[in-house]
Image (cartoon, helix red, strand yellow):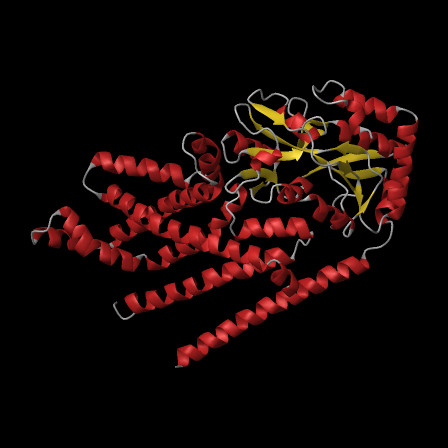
Length: 283
Length: 215
């Protein structure tokens, strides 16, 4: 009898602790949101000459670590560096690698000032972050093994089909609507997703065509099929407290489009990709 | 946070079921496998000792995630294994090495006179182990074994990396679609506590019942 009372008390204490932690954390995040000041990052970029960009490190052509040189390379990397220079000529672009899953939390926590990481502008995301004007046009597609009979995403809309995607990407959300009968298998990053595709963990891997082109560049055993079935416009994401930084970035981007340096970058990275017209991405 | 739970309760509960399933399968599998390897380590056969030793040393010195990824991306090329199966297999093998060590320690802690006594009463080595030594060994290792079981449940979160649909996988998915980085993880932490706390209490209870008063 006594031990039952003890148990009830112990469990009550545990429940109380959990509730307390819950309330405290709720309160904390609320306070943090309220306390964050306007244009903090903008002032820092202008004064300390460093702009922190969240970039992709595993997406060839767009943003990837070159293992030999240890440097990040890609269209988004060049764009980020050029935009930084145009926002504040003295500033340097500081690059931090993010994944589709970590980029928004890192932006909101202030680890990075801006996201430039193949991020599609969507209404859901607009509730949480602000987007720049779009700087890139892609479209969702699928990649399958070379010997696969799948010709388009329609061939995957059956029960038992497994489609691989990276969690946190817009593709992972879209595919649920496009092939509702198939199961979406979410993996943490593109390298894991590629290994999973090659090991037969799913019939196809879905992502934006530009990402797939980069991933499949040196993989003759994989092919991209069926063309694109969505339009994905990428935007740079900012905290809602950074209207000035966003405006400065938009202005720099418009300048780059006007003087042709933007087109030059697009041609540099996508001009030689087979099956892709580089002008498509600049739309 | 309550609305976060009610809006995604399907996902959380699905994850809860898969986590329980993976943990149960791995718990039973790892206990059997671990006991077998513990016996191989102590049996009077040099070759068996060696084989068991190599198994335990290799498996317990490789990170769980590496073992799991090995099943998911390497073994899967030969035999098809989905994320859940690879994760559960990885968890079973990994835990079995630790359980083997625990059980072996238990067997060695039983005074040798017990085995000798059993043998001199006409039981063969296996019978003496099974009827005399193992029951005493398990009593001794209940506390460390309980720790292994709790670790096993927590380690089941490795399934998230291979799309095993478990609690952690669901928390990642929900956090990445709702952009809430606190809520989903607090909720799954509570779910893990629901699994591990009663086990922890039960192990204490068992320990008291079996060991207490015996000394």
